[in-house]
Image 1: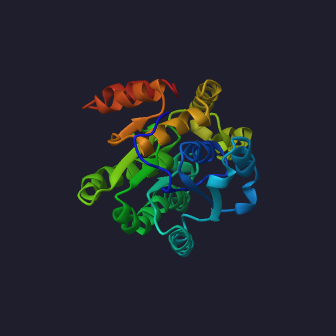
Image 2 (image 1 turned 60 degrees about the horizontal axis):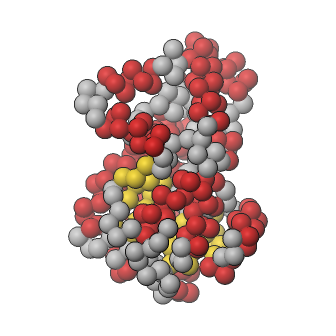
Length: 286
């Protein structure tokens, strides 16, 4: 992809880069000419990223730093380090997040809070810390949400609540940030073949046994999800949309990563009374 911006000395920070979309986005950004700061909570998991960067011939444009989005001190230390070394921050890609499957009757409010802590408040923390630096560079603020931030999905109540919150937060921030030259973009993947699903840590047998009256619906949901991810796009395909958001002169507020994701999101965005959305998602469980 040809860039419409001069990226030779520009620095992008990407969160959640040990695998999946984040790892692919680091490599793609470096290939596009960005100096790329790849952050992760546990830097001992950086081997796969370093190997991918080396194989792509961009290891010299990638640096790994520790950043835990749920720890304000970690966020501040990481950003301070980037600014001290590079003198600028031109873009941030919020990618860190964690999946979650469950329904509210069978989990605690603390479980829900934990999901929002990573997927919503982690984004808020990084955005708050990064905005002064992005304002100085008239930079980009890109956040990977999900089609689950547009369409509520069965057994994803907490996760979709977090992603809905991210979408509302950044849609509201976008016109304000634009007055200071910062462009905000939401990148919405559908199913992506990555470790994200495995990291949800659902023990299917145990979950079905504990599901009680929801067991038939959960079984249908899990079957449908397994089929969806069997036909998922690759992390590299999803990451290409992130690079488009980085390099396009005027990126859209919302950018889906596939035609499937666009079709799914459009169901909700043209559904004023919610009936079409409910008709669609109800087929997942009944």
